[in-house]
Length: 74
Image (cartoon, rainbow, N blue to C red; front, top):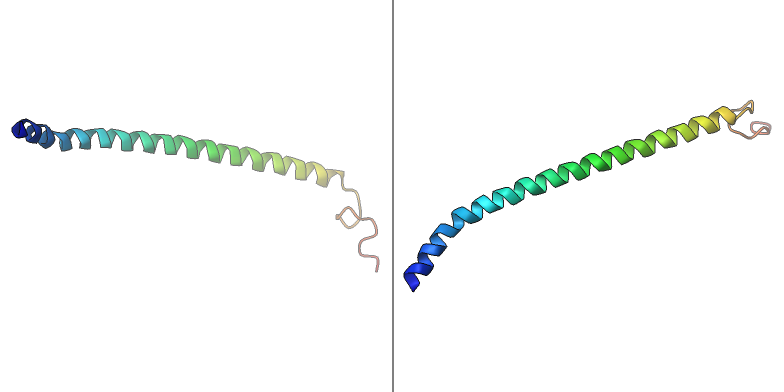
């Protein structure tokens, strides 16, 4: 009957709001976890890049520090 449908629909927003709140919390949690993972990976990449740059700089023995022993000799 229409009365049953109306009663069901009247209760739905509360249930839907509660479910929606749960979904929002879940999405926020997942986004936070994903962002943490992204920042961790970026930090790892930057650390690795810095180690490679430091290693290459340590292997550079040219007087100009550019790796080109003829640099600066016009």
